[in-house]
Figure 1: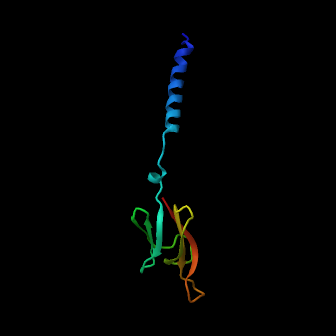
Figure 2 (figure 1 turned 135 degrees about the vertical axis):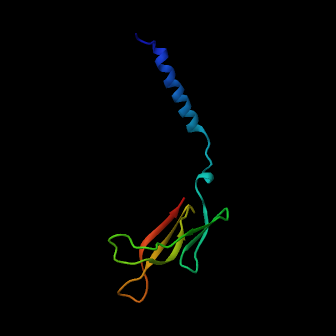
Figure 3 (figure 1 turned 90 degrees about the horizontal axis):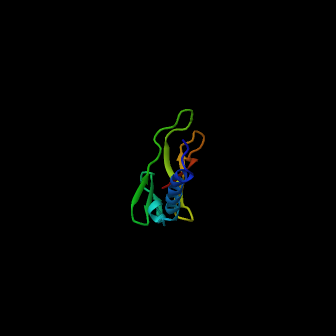
Length: 113
């Protein structure tokens, strides 16, 4: 038995209406993405980030090397920078090196929401 074309089109019309309503709903991006106000490195070498809502975020150093890596634990962060849109923070991850008397940056660590 064949269904009338109207019966087949009704579910598609309802779906299209729901999708168009959802697409037109206003979204407040401030609720979706944190905005960062400042960043610094604390006395232990961890990265400290403060949001515009004054929420403090701590990005800890990596404690252990991953399999296959020849360097040890991260010693500190260096040169933290906030992106121009204030939605991400980047900092160099510093590690001890066998051949220098100072730590060297081996990773760029990024934090975003």
